[in-house]
Length: 213
Image 1: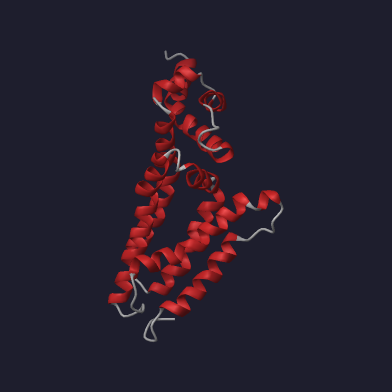
Image 2: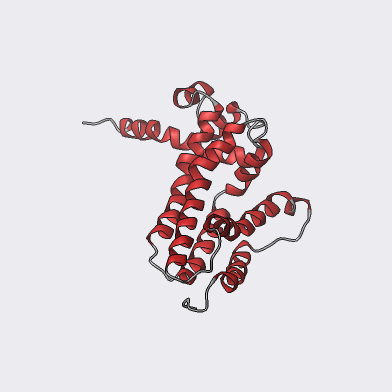
């Protein structure tokens, strides 16, 4: 007969890497990369520092795991939605920004983004991982969607990559505002409302007269 404690131990041991990643996500968002100590991350995850080193050799390895396991899968859902959308482009732009805004509001992505921007000079690997695993994929998918809409005659001429950057920039600025200025008393912006208004503004400038409304 199987011991009552054995299954729980096996499940607990298998859960440890995920719990460490979740603890690191919270620590990085709150304190930044340099100030987040591995001892604190281990304590948050309920493991010893030695146990943490069994799974992650360095803090940079832990950051890569945070991006790969906690953030990238959510962004991949958005990227896949963009890639699979057949058109019209106006429908896509009404869906994507609110999905991204929801992601930015439900995960502490804003704090990690602020950390990457603030500490990339001293830790360029942070920016490299963030760009290669997240930014390049999302921007590339939007760029492809814009180019496809241009080929269908829905979107005016212009550089698709520049259009893609224009589409996401206000969302990123809204998050940076929330993480940087709201804590010192600045009035908040509703990220969802910013997304909706911005998309309406972009659509009015991007769509051709022949495009579906």
